[in-house]
Image (tube, rainbow, N blue to C red; front, top):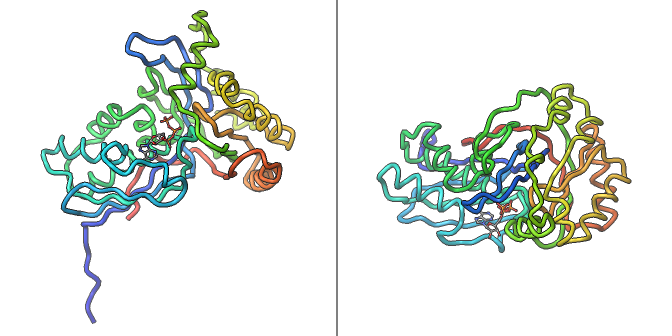
Length: 307
Ligand code: ATP
């Protein structure tokens, strides 16, 4: 009998979606970014990426929303692989296959998750010898959410969201994600926020969310539900008024709290436990107010090689 051949030229990685339990958006900076104070939470909703040696860089995407994901070099996972190869001084000879579970353009940072998965997978495939700091540096150049998807867990993000410090809190929280029909462009939501603010002073919004931190540490679901906050909500609700109704409907169905995910248009509802999340998901699904409903828990770990 022949023993199975051990091969290192296929690497499988998985990376998490995120929600922001708090998203404070400060003034527009001179570099075009907004100053943020945010609390990220990595979710058990993940994309899986397989990296295989190939003659040139290629990507295929299957699963949730695959048709809306770019196939060429603008795909964030391709950009991540190219940047890592360049840093290592090698050619990016890899085929990436992404199986998406994270809805596209939903405010859940699916593209960033794919980039984080590509970084850890290609690093393992090519044995680049890059350290954690090198991967974080490449991630930061790709986008703030890529740094978080690499890191995972619960973290406070400042700057434009790329400066992370871990939030130490035990426990697991259960969520229902109501994914709306059609996406919302992050750029459009920021522009709408600036329009609604009309130049008003917004420094105060970047204060650290003490009530949220206390709720996380005390593992108090009702307190966490009350502390959830996203400054982007008025802008997203202005562009997509149905979201306001989705939020109210989920709260009426018994969610302990609700907030917009990132710049939307997904709404996240907090449940008291796993079973409650499944029940709540069924009820929200039955209301017909969104395209699809998912359950997920968090925090979970960041991008990692799984095979
Ligand atoms: P944002 O980072 O803009 O807040 P999001 O979390 O709302 O994004 P993503 O799923 O990351 O949503 O998709 C945002 C856009 O990025 C999509 O419209 C898509 O065209 C583009 N994109 C590039 N690469 C990917 C990828 N690997 N997966 C999904 N989208 C990608």
